[in-house]
Length: 147
Image 1: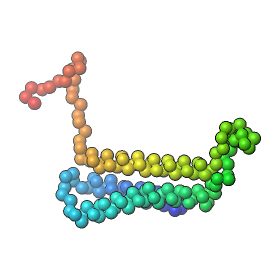
Image 2: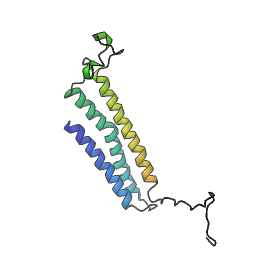
Image 3: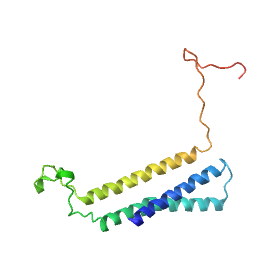
Image 4: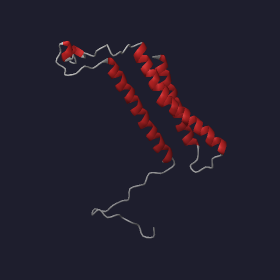
């Protein structure tokens, strides 16, 4: 559990570092070859960590400490998910390993969404929100003369 939580913390801290740097760096400032290489190495390590280490630490924790194996069945509260093969009424068997894999897939989905959001925030940094044009009662824009 410590390794999984630690890997999430490293991911969050590294992503916060990119957000911090994005606020400091002026939009359109020239970039040297060396700075580009350092930035690409940083982003590569962050993506490696987010897509490789975090899911691996989750799977290792679920396999070892939680013991979510294929022979361990999920019955749910009050055995509402007990399969028909075991004398219950649920139509199919769900193992804890299946739940483990679904959570790993959700981790990938969260990382992919955060990755896309980070790209969008980086590309839109420094852009100002457009102010709404004042409109008349009839819906036409009000424009001042001489503007």
